[in-house]
Length: 305
Ligand code: SF4
Ligand code: SF4
Ligand code: SF4
Image 1 (cartoon, protein in one colour):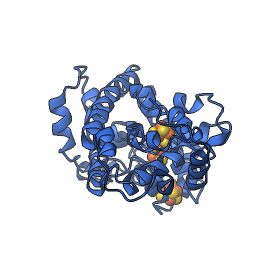
Image 2 (cartoon, helix red, strand yellow):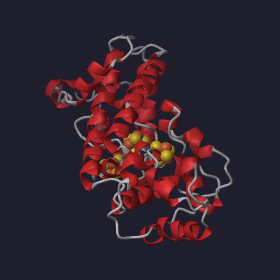
Image 3 (cartoon, protein in one colour):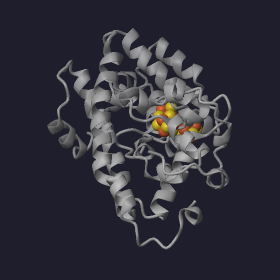
């Protein structure tokens, strides 16, 4: 149940978060675009914005949903009123740590968990690549979390270079990939690239420029991209990295390397691994309990916001 509706608090949150939350008209476009909501039905960016517009600071910073977010900014991009739910979520996380709702240690453990979770996603795609339709139980989930990814370059010899066909070269040309000077801006902006051996857009684009078609089209990594477009937005050379990765997926199916249901199987596998991640996050933070226990905090809620 909501603790209070507070117009002053609403203003304070708006000023501090700079997310234009008061512009929200509850269209739910952000919910429909959110990859975590699509996979799990457990993260609604619109609800987080609603907490802010009602001045519900406590509900905002104790919501487990703020920690479910990948910070991919697809919600920001799709909002017709230029509300920035992801910006609000980042503000809510830092307020949660500042107010003692979440300890620094728990926040650090969370970021480590999130980084290693990309390994789980990689192994889940690998599982699909080997035609394994078995549901993913807890045991492999935990084992994958601690299993680093084999180094992609280990198996590549110089004879493999420039081995791409016309369709591959056209896709690279369409994304202006030859302009890439490997600055790494895309990798820094990518929400998935926490562990570069698992997923690194610059590495993928470099492999594509070197014509390593077979290695790329059969790589689980190309299925980890959440198509958020941040690499394309930040590239100083105007390379369309997001479009290139979408083309690689299409080519893998079009060339017959993967069957037509592969994308669906990956989607189902990702749903299973995301659900487990959200349960882990809940266990890690025990959010509501820790908020009730922060009697030692010397600040009032208004000061905290
Ligand atoms: S930033 Fe991405 S994961 Fe987070 S709420 Fe927005 S769309 Fe969902
Ligand atoms: S930001 Fe652009 S130029 Fe820099 S590495 Fe990525 S694709 Fe290449
Ligand atoms: S679109 Fe680009 S920034 Fe977004 S997840 Fe894919 S590679 Fe990363």
